[in-house]
Image (cartoon, rainbow, N blue to C red; front, side, top):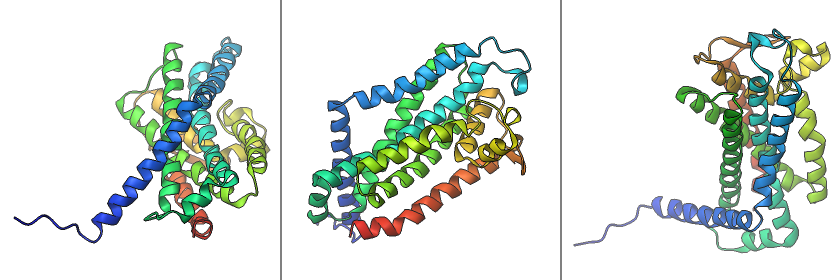
Length: 279
């Protein structure tokens, strides 16, 4: 009886999976040794959720669209901010590997594909972001801000995945383009909170001055927040208008389409840089 012969494509794919799994396991071992990264990623948005929810708990009726409570309105923004912050830090492990020389060791190692270095980072950050976001969602449910149904939960996960993939691609590109971790951390600090405030996470567009409303209507975080907010609102219908932007009405399908185009565009944008740096 002859043994099955591996096809020409099965062996490289198996080796790519093995390499990606090993590199991903290394990142999770680092997280296990330094769990403060995970804890801080949950505590910071949790504090925002509790404090801002309490601060505006007595807001007058009609202050927000649909008459929803501020805590429920804020919940979607905090969930997105949690995933966004985790994904924005995706480039830091790669940057530290560059500075400590471990990346050079990987580049001279007999890897089947150096794409496994990027894939491992994407898998690690995606898993970490989803864990942190689900923790925030569970806390929000305990605070009485609701929980999406099955269809709503699926929409939340799809939206978060698209946002995390896009921001992770951007962060990895910055990790290879910038000279060191100081510059990368500076970029993270400069863009983190401004992007949050220039979105519909904390207030609707109707409360913003025109110039800020334009920024919020173009902010990728807004296109992630509104579908998640709709998932919590009730019966799911992505064809309805979720955002009355200055340039026109935006439906849920348009929000998801923008996130998909953003994700594809960023990966295509950083691909030549990654090929050059990993060659």
